Length: 246
Image (tube, rainbow, N blue to C red; front, side, top):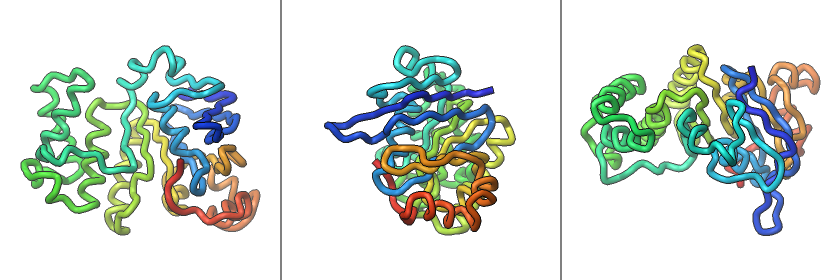
């Protein structure tokens, strides 16, 4: 079953076309990745998927609902882990989760219990009553993941989930994401780590200049074009994959 369908998707910013007439579909329970160089438009696509911005043209349906007329309902069923660290520096680790839960009308008694469970899930219970400033980069990324799960989302959107992490921390995040997928959570991510895409993604859409130049499973792409996923990407775009996007 397809939980997201996008058709003829276009997004313009001040006469600049960030997303240029793309189509894609994402099935329930799969991990779908967007790959692309700086300015390819993948982050713009992600923002449209979680109803932070609306398309200039085309349509996106999430759970069969149009994002422009059902934004609030869709948001209640989606979790978002942003690329940027936007945790509240004035609050403790656990308070960041409890306060964020208010956006989903989760009662304090429920959110506190969920917060403790999520901190245990990401191995941060020992840091519960400390401030954000005491956390390492890896711990902050883990907390952002926990926060994205506070509403038990059916779809989890992750924008560069392991940027800046050391290999050990990166693999810890991967293990958590694989665990979520086993429980039928649909994962949508952007990444500039080819190993991450190969490890996690069932399907990848390779983007360049706002267009999707190819979409398929990493395995089939490698079989079709030869070499590993990085070599496939270089052949299709002529660019190295690095940095974040529009």
